[in-house]
Length: 321
Image (cartoon, helix red, strand yellow):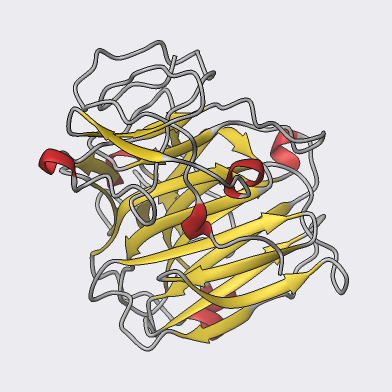
């Protein structure tokens, strides 16, 4: 197995009640995290919906994968200190959209990405459609990336959760993908790039319509392989014994996009009908934390408490500091 299930992605941490004053966004350091699936359900205690939690538990890995801390964002807001929202440019083929920051909106516990033809092509980098691309400012290495999302329906559309690093940051192209094609939202495609090489696509029948409701999607990446999960169930693995794997930390990213004519055989042709992709949360846990055992959970003053590391509080929009 490439690694443990991402449903074991909880750290030793105290969960601080929502509403604490925002901390300095420059400080990634100590520990605070949890999981909405598993040991701590962040929605059960006193009805509180704990928003994005960040953790830096000193669980770094050897270079080149000594990367950032754990996080869980439940999207009360879209924190510009944590996320980069693309605006005023495009990726080039096979993308047929210009990125617009106003097409990514967060609130009420969801991040919503929209695609349409508003102000296009003049306001869409010369392309016929506008959509949204959101990326973490930090990079993340071995560990678990997970999200709960509802895909956009419609031929030509792609809803994604992935990690990416590439030539724009001075590295080879490494990427790990979860993609749902809008022309058939009963299936999901898993893929990865290693040093720019791909051809690793694997399509899974979901047994449900991914555009009809929220579902959990995740992948766990380790030096020995990658495992993809849907609703906590293992659906696909690849092993370093048989393929070359990604090796460089990447940004955690989500986007919604339409393909151009070069990719219609793969995804279909988008007709311009406005569509939305919704994300309930996105998170990451380092491999060292995923593998931790012997964690003890208690209840103190009606709040979940997990013993074991130094703590810093945070509020709805802040960062551990």
